Length: 340
Image (cartoon, rainbow, N blue to C red; front, side, top):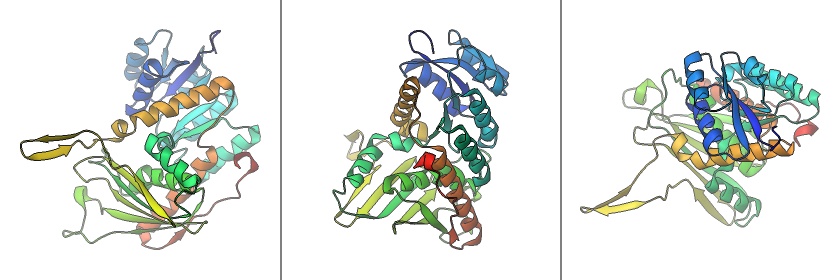
């Protein structure tokens, strides 16, 4: 860090999410500066770097991590390359904020977990941003305080206007429902033990966009809770994330989107966010600021490599359940002491 304690960050991946994090670190986050960016698209990386004093552009992630002034790494590259980039950060002793997924499958996530264990200390925070959303934080506090009694069920909805090009049915689980997987584990403090996927019969045999949807994903947990998730990635009208906790003495719901309501010409209405960047903008701001603050104190907080591994294992079970229609158990190794 500089003499003033500013954290120099290398951002790996400058697509939509990475570019937004570059903007956030440069314009919003206090105590941080973008020291380097890396992307296979050299021109895209250069355009971002040119707007930031002292920032260097690279096509090689390793070169960006080793660039002058880099104290930490924010990984926003595609999931399949995360493992190699995380292991390189470990070699350099750099703390990391890694966008989800930690890695695309449980096997590679377990390798990252084992590598971090060998270090004997945490270096990674996984980017499950809902843990930093104001509404979800209030729900978590309410459940932890047991003000509504014992939590028994969660009802969740996850809807997108439309998916990005190349989005597959399996990605409904691995890229979308993964957030409900982490939300379930975090809100309840329980591990997911089994997954099922049900789907309604569409009139033409398929859902919008040719994908068999909407789908209903069911989780069982080791604490006896039951969770249902409606996933609908081609809903067409907006981006919605809702979660209702049903407890022994009451219920609580977040995500209704109580923003400005207008009344005019005999009608009333409001706006629906069109994507996750808008809906969770404050959560991303809070997440990155908390990560920077922790790094400057020499610690790593937030969702851990264990959380990333557990989510990957549940996603694998979910994809199998989606393909077979069967109840699929989630298999986890014993939780290491580093993550307890």
